Image (cartoon, rainbow, N blue to C red; front, top):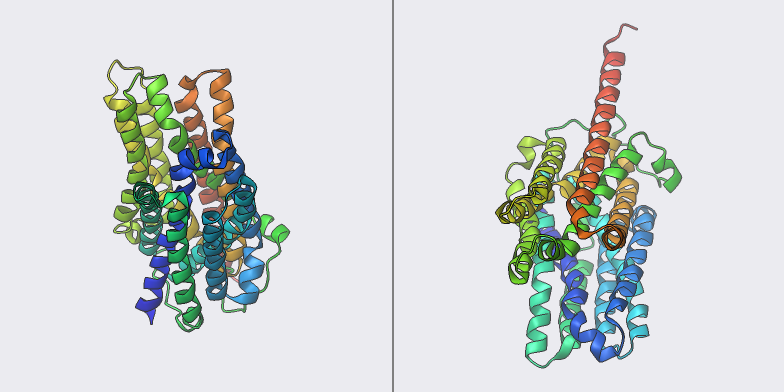
Length: 408
């Protein structure tokens, strides 16, 4: 049963990534068919992001009440319904309506699955599972391309993904009992938090979770990382073309390598994650991204270093997200992890949503040359926040050990 549930979770992570690239891949055709400006894609993404933030913050309460298996099935079912809704939408306002269940479903399942894996599986699985998300996100543009080429239209691509999501929903509903019957032992090299025990978990209110020492630090680190990732994905190609004079086709290819670096890097990180540990993965990831950003910023006559820096930044980004999630039960206790991971997801979506338009405004005002400086500031913020959290946790562990060894 252990292997069966793990297989289902892997498939679920691939499914999580499938809808995420469809709007971007299909929008050049969609906006023309719907008769709306190109910029209206931002309205859709904002609605989806708002839904994911809300459901992420509610995930702890919902999972505590209904269980992770049922929440996962219902959430995937909501995204399936949204995909079918997109496929039959003939007006932009209809897409906006269907974007609501899409966002709500995506946020809830993301937080619930991440917490379950962080609690019950080793760090290598967290990295490989997030690599599977990248596989799903990479597949959906091909689905859109095939649908458009086969004269099925963009609605055919959404219908195909909806069928895949609906099939997974049925599979998840049939496997609901597995989530409570399978309880694998964590294989973590790091000790669990002192607050971790067998006491039945109770609902942890949002305000209580935010007041836990160190939580604001990890939220800052997560916000910074996701801001780096989303800004690089959206603006790297434009920077290479407009500021460095790189050929548009070459810039697009290397911008895609940033995403491939994240996907491949997570796959490779899975082989060493249990030996290295989450904290070193986070630290090493941020430092590697910083080196990559420095290479991008070098004012050299050749573009080789800038292109290599973009690939290196992708590889460095790879382990940060999975390691932050996987370390949450260790850092803050298993009973608090669902609430905190839900807040982390909200911080992640906020960073991913706000950073690209903020940089867009900054580049219009100051210039596209600020791209590596913008990324460097976010990387520095993420590294400082994560290192401050490490020192706080180390100090707390030392205090606990001192109390335990002191004479009565």
